[in-house]
Image 1 (cartoon, rainbow, N blue to C red):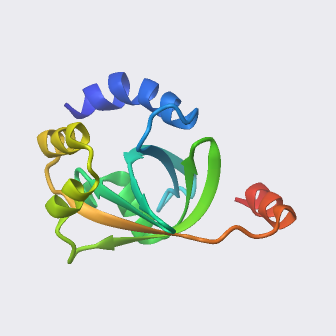
Image 2: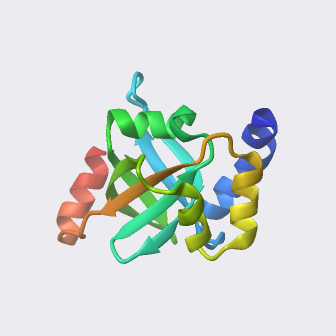
Length: 141
């Protein structure tokens, strides 16, 4: 199933999320915990103000979750724009209830069907700075 997701399903989904054409899904960019390279993954996210919620299907076994554990500073691409955020794995949150709170039944069913260890990840978005500072931070990222 992981190979099917990785090589067949993920490439077109990543393209749609990158273009902002997949509602409720975003691209999360982490830094590799060993390589330091950029790693981009598509996840379903629910936003409440400056907080974003994700239920990771494979919990701490997911590569992006291990990466954000090592370096919680991430970028999130929402509707064709990058936003800076700080991520935190919330072990005390009820991932099943959180998934239900998203209000997307088909997404919740897919996560439950393919998930092995549902875990909640909280993203706190950093308020935007001046446009000049944003350009400089994008270049140094």
